[in-house]
Length: 306
Image (cartoon, rainbow, N blue to C red; front, side, top):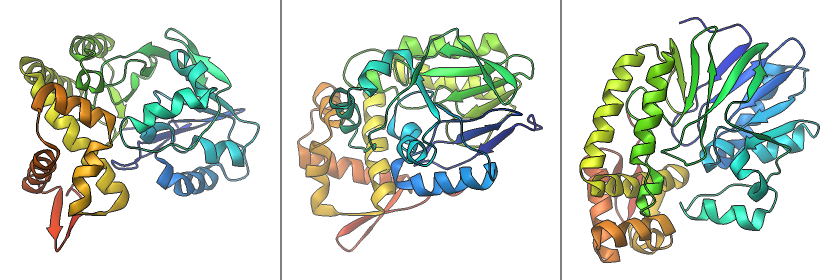
């Protein structure tokens, strides 16, 4: 798979999203910036690749913490850069008291940053001397955007499509829909017929039809019983915290889960477990999946084999 020379894909794993760095003739930019605990690493990677050039712009596909957590450090190091966020989030970003609860809802963190410009669906953006169209892609996040370069058939899909599935349908955890929107986004990707997909997590891939087939199967499975999405969302949120902290005392897990508003909402709507029962269930599920281990009085993160 050969991408244009002006593009660099920084595959970051599953705590931070991938970053796509564009090094054009006159302008540089990064799409998504990872999670805050990896911010120093994000900055080091950008500085290494840009060498003596400045970073001119940030573009966030959506404002989940693992996609915008490096914004602040990059803004501090490159004070002249212009930060672009989806238009629906622009006002909230610049009124952080309104923005902060969106990160607290998942039990995650994000250092405050500012937005300089809004991206609207249909906007055409120049990145790496190439034209990219911003496309609305609700489902995983109601305001998420994709970036599509028609000339080379490249799609930056964020969490709307991975090689194996897509991101949690978070709006559905609190009863706000999302399944139909996810399906519509997959339909749009199918219509675009991209040759290469750069996902928010995982390596870029060219077997797009196979990925779409798996994604359609998964959304059908979740639509048939929304409890499945709730269960998956709770497990994902606990796993994320475990990846961040690496180990958590067993006795702290019930209170930790109870402190996460989206977990509480999903449990109340779909599972109705007591908090001790919920913690035991989530730990058991992740342990069976090989995603954590129990060692003495702690749950410990286990990295997935590739």
